[in-house]
Structure formats: C-alpha cells, structure tokens
Image (tube, rainbow, N blue to C red; front, side, top):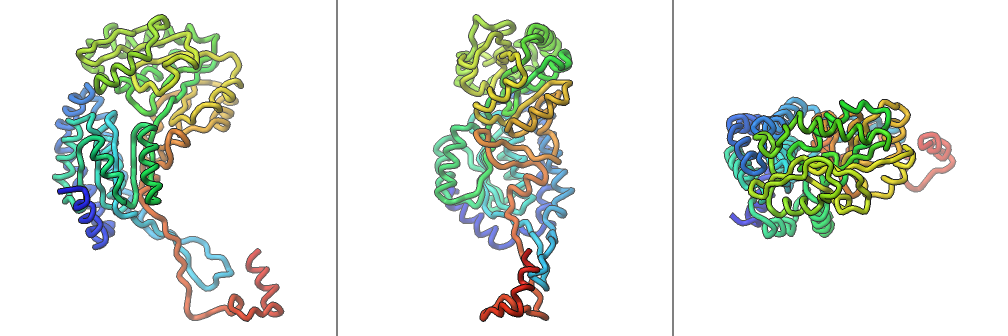
Length: 457
C-alpha cells in the first residue's frame, strides 16, 4: 500500500470519529501494553543486534520506560481529555467558558536509531492517548528494532489507524511531502531543519526533539566521588549515544586532577579494566558514526581509554584533557563515548561562555553551593537537566521533556505529551434567556458608557 493511500485511509478513519471516545483510546493503549509485554525478549534481542545493548539496559531504558509511559496514559487520559471550565468575565454575562483538548488528526512520528524502540513507541502511545491516527517512520539505522516495532504495531492496529513505513531517505522525503495535521520528529539538528522547512510549507504544527552539546559543570564545592560516578553513568550509557548525555565537562581548575582520577576509577568500576570485553558495554550504531567519533579523538590529549575495535564498532570510554573550544571534539555533538574536559577559574565566566553557544538540550551542575545552582539555573537557557546527577530528569512522566532553540521546540512526556498531540479549543456557551444590549449599535454612550468601563477594567 502506498503512502498516499495509507494517509487517505487514515484521514477517512479519523473523520469517522472512531478515535475520539476515550474508552477506545484506553482500549488501544491496553492492547499495545500487553503486546509489548508479550514481545519483551524479542525487543531486547533486537536492541542487542542493533546497538549491542544488554537485555538489562534494553529493558531499563527502552521497553520498561515505554510500559511506564503507557500505564501513565491509561491512568490519566480521562482527566486530560475532560473539559476544563474557566472563569468567564462579567462582560460576557450570562455564559459558561471552557477549554477542551481535541486531537490534531493525522500525525506523523519520525524516530531515531539511538533509542529506537523507546522513541518510536512512546510518542505513538501519546498520539493514541490524544485521539489521533499515526504514521510511524522508524530509523533505517536500527533495522532489527524497527522490524519488531513494526510487528507489534501491525499486531495491535489496523493500518487506517496506525501504519508503519520503513525505509531510508527516499521514504522520509516522501512522507515529508505529504500534508499531515501534526509531525513529531526526534533526531539530529540538520534533519530537524529539513523537517521544519517542510512543515512551514503546509503550516503544520510540529515538535522537534533534537540534541546539542550538553555541558556538565562541576564546581569546587562538588562531591567529587559521587559526581564522577553519576557523570560516568550518564555519559557512557548506550555508548554515549544519548541525546541528553553530558557532552563535555566544564570543571573548576582546582579540582580537575582529582575529578579525572575519580572518573578513571569509576570507568574501571562500572565497565572493567577492559571495557571492550565487557558483554554489557554496547557499540556504535554503524561504521559511518564509528569513523566520525574516532576522528574527534586527539590521541595526544587522551588521558584514559582511546582504544577501538573496528570489527565490533566499539570505542572505549575515553577521557580527553587540556581541551579547548577550538578543538575538533568541541565543534559538534559527540554522540559517542568520548568525554572532553575543559576548565574554568571564575564561576561567573561560565555565563558569558555558554550564553554565546547554541542552547543545549540538557545542562548538569554538580555543586553544593546554593548560590551557584540558583544563578546557573536562572541565567542559562537549556531544555532541562539535573542538579548533582545526569539524564534522570527525562525518566518521569510528570515533567515535560524537550529542547529550546537549536536543541528543539515543544515538549512531551505525560500531560505535556498529551497536550503536544492535541489542540486546545476555547469555547464560550452563551445563555439565551438574557441578551445585554450594550454591545449593539446604535451605541448608547449616555446609558452604557460608564457601565462598559466598569465591565472592561
């Protein structure tokens, strides 16, 4: 079935009103939940094939996370979809005012390869909860996971409700040339710009979840051992192929040597002395990205790691010291297991430095100084982040997750996701038993002039 036919069938299905009842949405979410549980092993096996993820990490960071989000939607979607009454100004007496979230209609979800199951199914669950139909386009770089996601979706839904389109650039281009009611894209900044150009042609609303160079700031009050432990977890999870991974460390010069020492200790504790032989340590998705990351490593500045295996597409957790902002590793998002370290002397200099750079998707600060934390979180613009930890801010359905500026637009997770896939209508229900005459011509200034000013102040 071609894309035009799929989309036309989905338009007809949405216009029939089949997706609108909340009971139907809950039924579909429950069906998706049970089907994922049934295929848990196949999902984690696929993630191992595509990215070398262990079954534990595959469940923790992808399948389990998806199940949590679906459960949240099942529990809360009735409340999200309800009419919400709002105060009516006295000038509109007598009437009732309310807002109502309604689905956009036919949506497109384009997902990346780094968390290929999570970032395909979680937005889909949100689209279903909001009452939309969906065309899902998983990444061609994660074929095993895309295949199991396709199988699960086709087992759950008819294509006029949810359809999967596989393939590469040709299919992406064909989809973006269609008119959708809403587009949800997760991926690189370069492709995000292309998506935005296409949505502009049709004035289609969209959410862009992109990335960027997320800094990790460590000041001289931080608890260094704990900071090192949590930084290593966030940086090297999924071999650094996480959009919110700490991209580089910006630490106070007085604690740099101590921090590096503790980071090396933590790498060996978490991944062993030979990480490339650790069965729970993954790999880079393909040769293209493997080569790109290798070219970012300046061997003369490596203080730990640096070894690679081209046959398994693995790169050791690698620490680079004495880095400057002009180095190759600081010119692009690393998206791999390479951690550069830059120092600062004066905490206030951080604001000037980071304010001149693209707005990151995440920012992390390790500090015991309430003053530094308060100033940093207030003065810098970024998508979200953590204080004294990394990446865990995205693991809750009660907070929106999204970027700003170069790192994206819009947000999702929980209620924010439901809102992203919905249009909020504002509706006034005017009573018919009374009709105040002051708004109609001919205007009677003498009688209603003062009264009008009272109403509208």
